[in-house]
Amino acid sequence: MNYPYDTADFHTDDFHYDKSTKKFTAEASELGLKPGFIPMEIILTSGRTGNRANFTLDFIEDDGSMKFEAWNPALKALGVNVHIIND
Image (cartoon, rainbow, N blue to C red; front, side, top):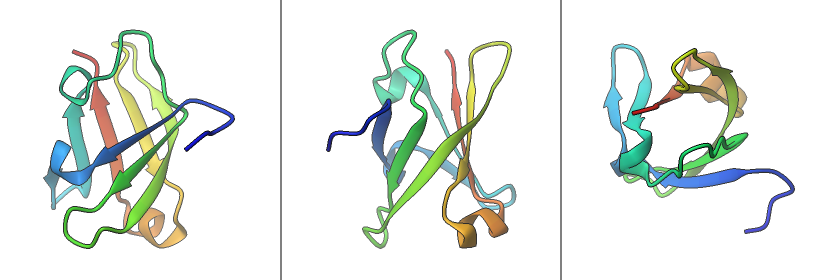
């Protein structure tokens, strides 16, 4: 798909999911992100349901790690988020 800004597509199988924090976590290198690439939005496809969910960039930490929050109001209300660690 063509987007007017930097977007990346991933699969939930590429992430570790922590039920207690409702956080998907992965290292940038394991996801194949090139150094310096900062997606404004990521699309995560569920390995269980095949549903796709959008997450928007919320915060970049001092070490370059990125935190994304759910765009979907239901997922956002549940506190589901994504953390990509800059390794």
